[in-house]
Length: 81
Length: 393
Image 1 (cartoon, helix red, strand yellow):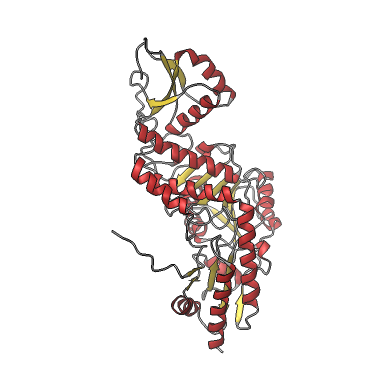
Image 2: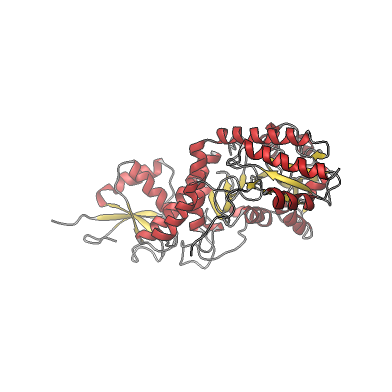
């Protein structure tokens, strides 16, 4: 069984991550808070991990809810975060 | 260590200073946090840190629900309302700016304003009536070209008078002034609506009528308020933008440097849960009934002078009085030692308010009722006051 491919929503602070998670879960998009992958940012906080295939949907839902975030980035295949 | 409660038979009428008892959920939430979670909110990315952040975030949401604010991220936590008020006054007002306040304010407003006055900030203190009411028109008349802010308490910590914040808010909006409301004595006791009352900045404290623990308080920012216009009181680690040596400018992090009081905020969340479940209108009805009972009975004692407005509809549950010929401290001590009735006596950190009602520098005896007080307790307290009054004849 191959592990799924992920992407992450980078945010300004943990409280923003909680808001992103809330919006995505309400939209039925699986979301989990994880530490920010070092290769994406030197920030020591958290980001929101989603499935790679949900990147576009997540963007749409976050924009619809006027939710601020830094960006959505794919993780390399095989990486969990 | 085992704790025993030796105080269960006391009548606690000092809710205007801090509410007590708290709903059971408050201590439970704090014990749960300390026992099962414990981690630092907004720092680290492990599951306990995230759970800690979640509790803080959920408390922000509850505060929004209570005050009809729209964005949990516009709620910032400080150690208490005094710090929150200081943050706005000291962070926003610059030499040459003009600020308007009332003569019923607590020292949490007066002292920072007096310190700012020495730096060149101009202050107008609008005179209130002896029953603590302010005429919104007198605020409008005080506006100058350099006026930047109106700061007002929603209700008096000395005599409970509720000020017309919605009308004052409309005036502030009309002249494009920032409107800061001190809700120390009103939050959770009466309905407050950031939108309807045109509040730009709402300062709250957790340990009074929000039924949370001490060490919690903060600000709610209207969506239209630009946080870059208000300098933070302190700067430091926020858990965000760690690569930067400059303070982030976004809410709530800009005003939340250093580890937050997450255990206290967990308790505050439980306090607000209780209020939301019970309903502010139900709380108001109960407290207003007790307040009217208290005012009417105190006024019926010939030696007693009551300073609070006659009508409890105008009062958030704070009743100030004196017994002629007996100092407030003497009354307070006798109430405590002889009858187990706990009050607060003196000037209540509000010399301006006592000057307004005519009780400076002696002060008054203050009863502050809360949701857990009963009509029987009011009867008992009245009997105690009557007994002290009788002995003074």
